[in-house]
Image (cartoon, rainbow, N blue to C red; front, side, top):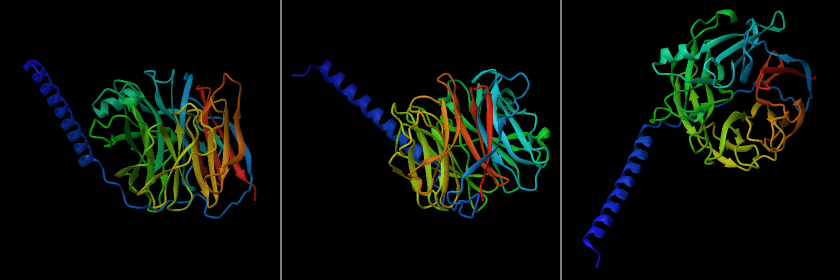
Length: 390
């Protein structure tokens, strides 16, 4: 016979197990009910509408973007193409300061002046303490700025911001230009809000790569979830920057920092950083303009747990900047593909020694040129500009 004390212990254990199951069901149900709906199908825009075939890229210029004075560290740049009738070809944003996660880290910016064909003096446009005061909570670190230009030609910034904890405890803060039409020296931003991505204080969503521009003037912003499981999510915004919804892009749990590349107006690929020891560039795809996503086989390209950047330049011409060594970030290359599966080397970007790092690339098309930026030794942001032979 089972003793009364043992019977009571078993009943208590079952009760705790049942209570735990009910709590889990309640949490999952709450999450499902409060999740933003998946947005409707959309059509993406080609930067170049005329097929380019295999016309080679030709290096036109290269160098380093100016740093704010007395700033020894830089990382995670983003490039924003500007309107053809404006003073700048592109704007560049990155985070800079004493070192990554230091209290003085801010978001720096510079613009490439069309008249002088030079980068303008860099300055900080977002500072951690001021951002926390406006948002109403302590911001411990900021980073990974991603820029977008809305239908009214206002610049939007999406920035990773953390409170207590590391990058996995981040939130994505949406900022908008507060003085549209002002020059680079007066560029300023105001917070819109923390993006409402999770009922759990919107924690552990991070942004890294450029949005995909849509024909309706809106965009799709690729982000990822990082707390324990790591998976990509696509966020939809309308032409003024209002958040419309989100959808998970992969069922994998070891991928992050997705970059979007279009094969056609409604067929897009998400190429992702892989955290497995022998990682490859991983892939998910949508064939209905972002409504549904499916995992597809990895690319043959190795990935040393490093961020990649892709751009669908023209029909039949896709580009990918990536680290091409299996275990280090000493090699950074630009590859191209016509079908999204088979990639060949288009240009070597930076090849260094074992102690060097070239990482976190960004791509943009402006002034009939391909612009590339990337982190150089965690100290500066390097850039290169390529034309296409006729």
